[in-house]
Amino acid sequence: MALLDFKEIPEAHKGGGQQDTFELLARDFFEAMGYKIVRGPGRGADGGCDLIIEETRTGIAGTTNVKWLVSCKHKAHSGAAVLKTDEAEVKDSVESNGCQGFIGFYSTLPSSGLIQKVQSIFSIDHQFFDSARIEQILLSTKHGRKIAERYFQNSYALWTKEYPTKAQIFSDADGLRCVNCGDDITEGRKGIVVSWEKFRDNEAGQRERHVKHFYWCCRGECDRELKGKYGEAGYVDGWEDIHDLRIPTIYIRWVVGLLNHLYGGYRYSSEAFEAQKEMLLQLFPNVARNLTMGEVERINDLGAIPSFLGGLGYPDA
Ligand SMILES: [Zn+2]
Image (cartoon, rainbow, N blue to C red; front, top):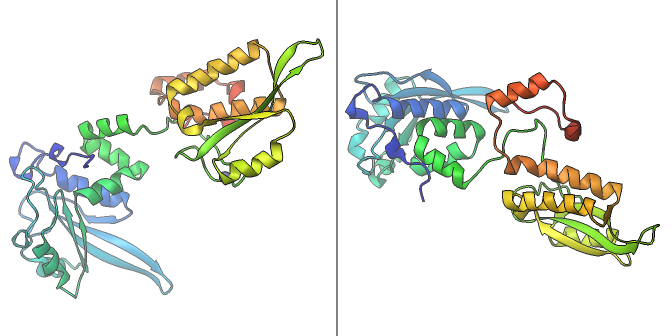
């Protein structure tokens, strides 16, 4: 299912000062991909040429520059494919503009006739970017998502609601890594947190729950290996999905649970307690929102890193 609605970009022939929007998207898109913009979008008759971009290829024999002619066709509003007849002069336009390659940048699909036609021109390279490929590339990088946010305001807002990204809270919260294999297990579904606990009598003769170990790891093999290392007589292991802990409701339930434990009859080893704090800090960006500019300023005014942030540092303004 398409996530970005290309119909949000105005049609080229409708005027109103926005007729270049799709070409501007192409410019920003290729710039974000690392191409150099040699000639940007311009108004008026373009003789089949919308953009010229340059790619620097680094190889064993040194660097070579390849110039691409980019043809933008925005037909999302009609939904029609881009036809052979829409790209009449591919070879001539590429060569007369001093380019070595042709790129079709389309908000729909190229027709098979057009693909065949371009493939048959052996003297030039070619690439096609259709809406699905453009969307996939835009949404897969931070820079791309900024562009998507600008050109696809409504569909991007819907997408971020369904696929929330981490808030920029700490500059170097780099997530939870499996204590056995080192894999990043913050995202995805394979990570769990494990605690080893037992009931015991304390010095005053009162019953208390002792939490000896707390760590995070991959479900399965890593979990079994760690069980061999941390398991000991009388202690029972409990676990929770990290995937669930990234849900705001479960996260705050965990925090309140921890407070209740500390007030009630639980006793944490210092190792287990430090690990609990580390986990809460590392997962916090997943349940928090971004800071407003005012909040960033306020934190800078306050001047001190709160002690609970320890080594996590300042927010990423
Ligand atoms: Zn692991």
